[in-house]
Image (cartoon, rainbow, N blue to C red):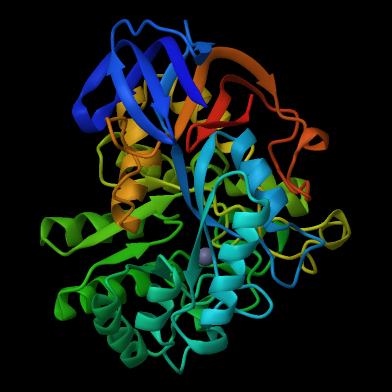
Length: 424
Ligand SMILES: [Zn+2]
């Protein structure tokens, strides 16, 4: 079926378009984009007063399937993504079993084809079983459909293994997504190390646990002349290292999550386990440094690190609870309310960070843009719509969000994947 989206404010930073346009979609691709498209035989969507953006891509999601289907499945995670305005998601390999083999990658792709409403791109492990020792067969995994490599949740502790993995990733032509954590420094820690952790007497994770690994891995990327993507940047010192690396011409990109942008460690005074996440929510100075780095263009991507956990798992003491925040259905309203509507980030730069840059980093050539022939993935936004976060309304299987009850202005209102309306 052909779809005609009329009178929307089309923003396509890739072609520097910001104009009222009609978009015709045919057989899953953009067929025509111009001021007035007439004719019949189309399903028509009136997008007046809405922003029409290239489909949002979340490159850091935990879908929990195979193995932990009580937390989330590929199907429910994809429904949550569609509702949250994402047309594509990339899923981390820390499933059970770990995605370190062609079988698991193929299972995820087959399950996505059967049950997912958005595009699902598997990320395979850097090392077998995420054990940090034996590097996976990256070329084979990439051929099977793995789009990138990560041991996310675990650092690659051995520098030699990381160096070899970087060299090998170049052969596979896929980026390594780096979880930066020195486990000797972070061991047993629950929250950010600072005045609040001292006051509460909670074992903490220092900023250095992240900074040391960021420094090591940008140095390894420099030496091996490979590219690297740093996941969930959370501290000011890591931002400084990122700036240094970019100024040196090292091929490094980085992402930040909404929870690190909009929360600080003092919130842990509530002992709410929904605030327990790794890397931890940091200090106000760190948060400000991240916001500034975004507005100055140093950070490339916003990703959710969507990490669903069941209520039973989170309904325990802080030290017993698993790390992770449910992010797919809150990210876009948070970012529109707190960055775009407050003029900290232009709508155009926001779209670059949540659509164009993830597409480029993951090598998705037909995504992140609205041009004739590209995949017809679109996110429609209403910048004025007011929403109240209600975790009971989540399509995700889990409810672990610290943003429950937050009032926000700006929301995704329709999600189109391959020319099909998957959320409205
Ligand atoms: Zn991680």
